[in-house]
Image (cartoon, rainbow, N blue to C red; front, side, top):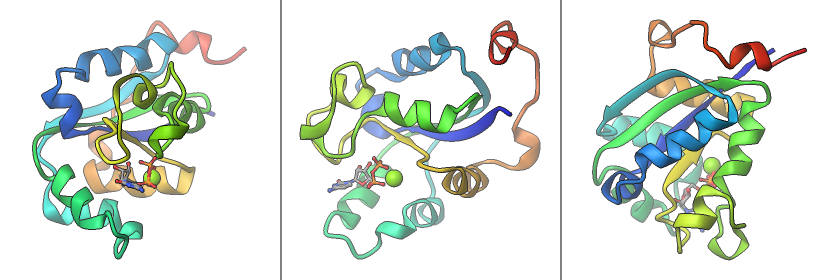
Length: 150
Ligand code: CDP
Ligand code: MG
């Protein structure tokens, strides 16, 4: 079964002009885009999305950052897409990031880390519903889907 995950291309990536190359990485692997929007995150969405971080020392900075400019929110679909996109994202802590990951290649600190990706199927279902209505998630054929399974 193909899974879905939520990716947010955060304001630093949009400002730095990295949106296209980040999306391209995901497309090249063979994942498909099920939904995508260019928008400013509302305060309500930000609070809901990062609710587990409330009270942390970086929480205020994180909120200000996410609300500081436009983002691209997208739903990606494919086999094991949650785990695969987390690996392609790279680690939260800058010193643990590996080259070849989005954060490892383009980000030097813990906060300004270019993208968000869901960390589990529970998170992905919850996070997708913050940003998308069910009818905004599209079902369609792509050339890569036939290579998803045997
Ligand atoms: O984004 P990820 O799931 O890897 O990390 P998280 O632990 O869910 O934290 C959410 C976001 O908070 C991170 O992506 C960072 O932007 C920020 N953060 C931070 O600034 N400093 C930390 N020590 C941890 C997280
Ligand atoms: Mg997280």
